[in-house]
Image (cartoon, rainbow, N blue to C red):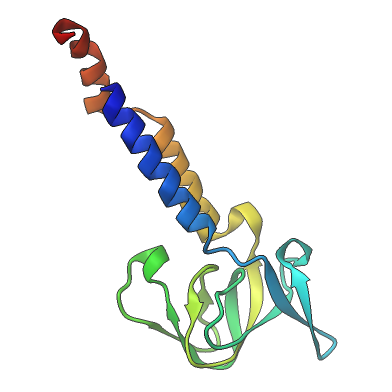
Length: 143
């Protein structure tokens, strides 16, 4: 039981690190018609963010201008790129395809979809599965 638990914790920690690596540290904010590179922590809800082709979406947002496709495979499991156009939602951590997009920030920090996924994985890792509990109960009999 303890071996399985330890192995599961290592795998979960690895998965959490992989998810955290999807979060960019910087973004390009559009303010007064000028682009400025800022730390993600400096962004506020409603800020307009520019995402160039091939970049990860730094925040959850709504497309204001442009069209592209988003590779959301690592977040949603969707195997094909998803078309994005004005009015569509994007998830922070996904990869922008071929077009330049202007977004309005709709979620930051712990409120993003990616942060919620990480929290769910951490919570699941902290709770013991029923089979682990059973293994802990019966293992003393065999040891």
